[in-house]
Image (tube, rainbow over all chains, first blue to last red; front, top):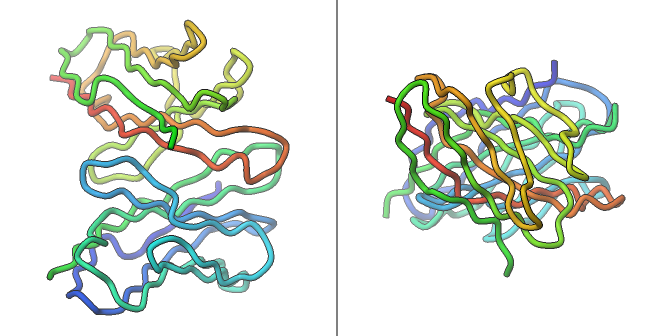
Length: 115
Length: 117
């Protein structure tokens, strides 16, 4: 069965530190990949997505992610985090086969940024 | 900007009771979804709904669950006889659902926290 793994469950950083959150998916074939963010008390919001083309994807708020097909990875990065980046981050994948467009979510990574 | 709304934000119920969670998807969207997230665990897909019928459902979505679109705006999730393990955050989502893949991008509501005691 398809799965999405986020290996970092809790990350604590100081402001201005660089961030990289890992995401791996477990199946071959064509996938579409997403990162969602959930700020405290708010709903899931799309940060960025990869469908095709340039494997380096730029998202909102200075985030980017790189799709590395050979590593089945889609890691999220930000060169300098801010206190306001404190949130829960979810990676998700859609496998383009069988006509299903239901995303599989990772467990989430809780990021705390200290001012 | 249009958004998905959910009510109530928090629902407390006793085991065995029925609950109805309500969602108002974005008005021109065609696909609707329910997900749940048990505390500390991953977001899990429950069901998707299109053209007034269930299009996909997961193993979690057993006979105690049902969904309905009773009018042109609401999308509800009913749990017939709640169990302690149903305690979770329930998220509704909608997507435009046109032929272009990017239209399957999902827009999430704020969630309803269900606590079963």
